[in-house]
Image (tube, rainbow, N blue to C red; front, side, top):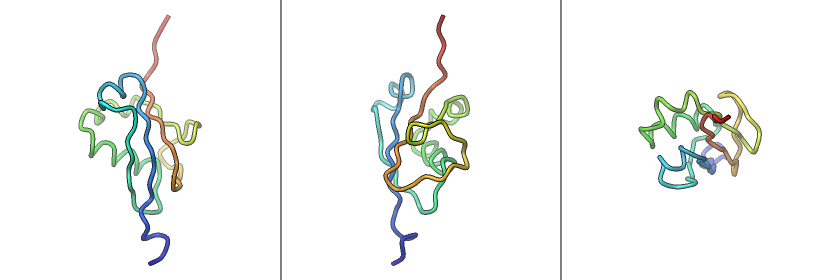
Length: 88
């Protein structure tokens, strides 16, 4: 078995409204290697139907840094789903 056959495990943190809607502050996903933030996005949409329309407006941070969908995700990475922030 080569390393690309091993599942890639990542942790996803939900903040604010995303936390409320998910009913949990975090979840773990297993993905096929190689994986990108876009792959995490697709896996989250498949698991959580409520994310479908909302995720486009949310920011995704990978290991505490905002990234785009093409960012490569490594084993043990932590992604944060952050809803839009408003305030005054």
